Length: 127
Image 1 (cartoon, rainbow, N blue to C red):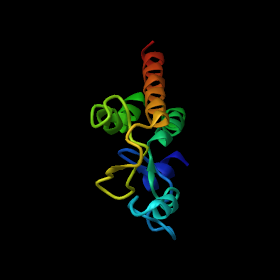
Image 2: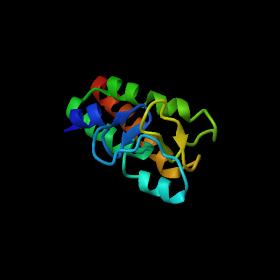
Image 3: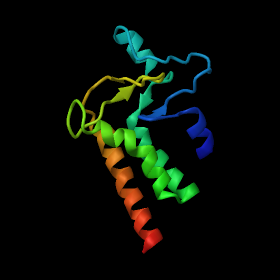
Image 4: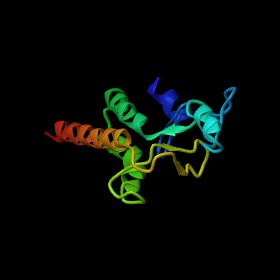
């Protein structure tokens, strides 16, 4: 299941809420309020979903180095725009431009939690 999610939903900035090619998929989070609200769960990428995905990835693959590589784009994004924060959502299609709130606490918190989990897994492997 983790590998299927990675193949169809994972982007550099989190997981899509719907896979490309599925009915109703929207690759861009754009338009008026009603259009944006309808795009939320039709493909929009949520950074906060990276936390649970990294947890599952580590349980299945036990590879902290690979998990850390998956996290690098979001860690880099912490140094852009709202320093130390992450955007709420990103476009589902490349270039995965940030959208929504530019400083979303749950996005930053889940990425920091995932990093802590990766560091703990690395220490237990070398331990």
